[in-house]
Length: 301
Image (cartoon, rainbow, N blue to C red; front, top):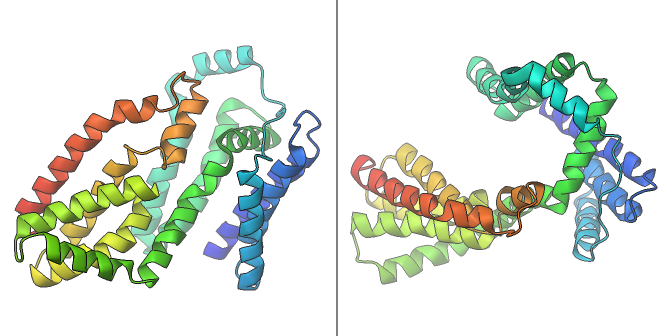
């Protein structure tokens, strides 16, 4: 069933690309359309396409984004007055579609025991139907608004996947082993506190550099979390893993590399300082990192 979810996502992206090609008000319609078309094809046919073809699609997307061939156009969006009146009448009911997605995903995973990604896809479709029912909008309007949002985000929409793949490549290249050897040479041998600090702060720093906690997790957990904290020190793998990932998320709050989390919101909110989100989040993120470090030290061993 997961393959159907990927294919549905791909079809939606292809629909966005076709709309982009036909958008005469977008001066970069061709580049934008090709980008989403390549992305959609990879979702629809990724399981059957040769690896080299998928690689070519990725290179095409990278080229389009790097030379600035993507832009925004017209989206047949609803009028501002209609949005204001709908928001005033629906009030907190507007949050219902947003709540359906996480609740449905968790319920699917817990009840069926199958991949949470399947639950995410099903919940998203259900949320779409509920949103259309609440707002009395036609389904095609969802496609228009979806394209408007993804065009606003731009290439940053795929950054998480790219960086997660990069983390996997780092893991396969043995970067985790190198990190482990460096930590053993720097920190006091057998010191739980030193190992914990190296792990949590290593997750945050590597996330700041990579822009993605998933990419950092593959490297730092393989290099520090598993061999030093879990195997050597006998730490609880659940506590170590969960708090390690959350420590990476603290790094996500502090870096412009996490463009889809920090730079895109600043653009959507039209903030004068594109780093304002990071500036606001830095101190809370650092405090949470210290709390995660303390929790891991006191509860994982």
